[in-house]
Length: 236
Image 1 (cartoon, rainbow, N blue to C red):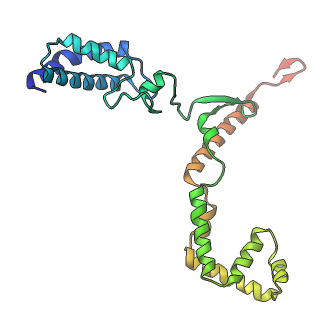
Image 2 (image 1 turned 90 degrees about the vertical axis):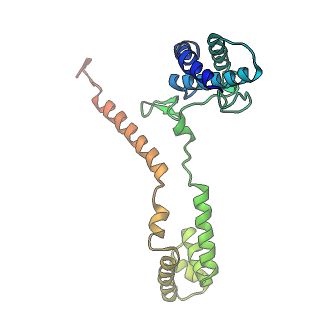
């Protein structure tokens, strides 16, 4: 782009776009007006550059007009795909939509609060990657230590007492108890002092969700306790 075209863009085309875009282009998804104006200026600069290379005649009004038409049709400076899920054109066609996690999708009568999309998508189960990593650590630990450690852990997982596990394996109970204590020391040495605490600690992402739910429940409880009650047909 020549210096003359750059001055034309800044002094005549950009002011037109700042006046037209807020009135003519509807934001889609998380877009805002200022972002749309900047996008339109970039598109206008691209058009201006191509027109200059082709040697065609143009006016600032022409460039601004067609830049706004591109924006209204869903084209943006970074792309104009109509098959990309996040593409503006795809959303304008109604093929996809982008919603905030705070979007209300239902209502919980028990809590007297709306249900958000984020609450529906949040899994109550453990992160699969964390579970797989922990299983791998335990597999390596058991493979490199006394095989009876695996017997003790299996009994604990099945809800059996150490005495029942010792009896089922034909082991002496006091000896099995000492083995369990030794296993605890080996686990701390192998996995680290904080391993047990980390295994039961609530992940930060889940803690944030739980905190929001607790706040919602508390607000619902306060509203229920503050509601007036009827006494002999009158409200107290």
